[in-house]
Image 1: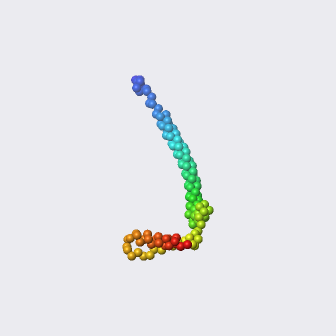
Image 2: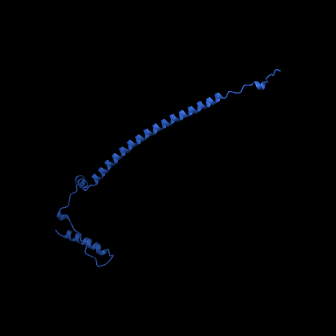
Image 3: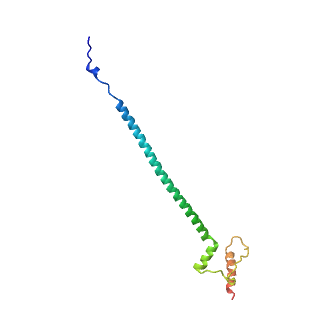
Length: 129
């Protein structure tokens, strides 16, 4: 007896090897893209880091320069030289110096005796020829 195959039996199974190969290629392509993206990002970060390190060195050098300039400006000799050269100032002569000496006050907390004691040597110095 001969057995004939039906239409259902004669259908071929679908070939799923192409789908698996396509997924494998897509996975490899995405991994390659991720690797390239990572390398580009890393290179950009390294360039940025080197630029920042260069800026840091420049700022440190300028900070040291400004510190030295500040110390030079704040030194007494520089202040004295600037006062003499720019402002025309000079040390007073001995006869121009007036010493204001405060005698001890008998009262505690009074300001009248303080003002009088501060002004009396000046008044005496002005009244002398």
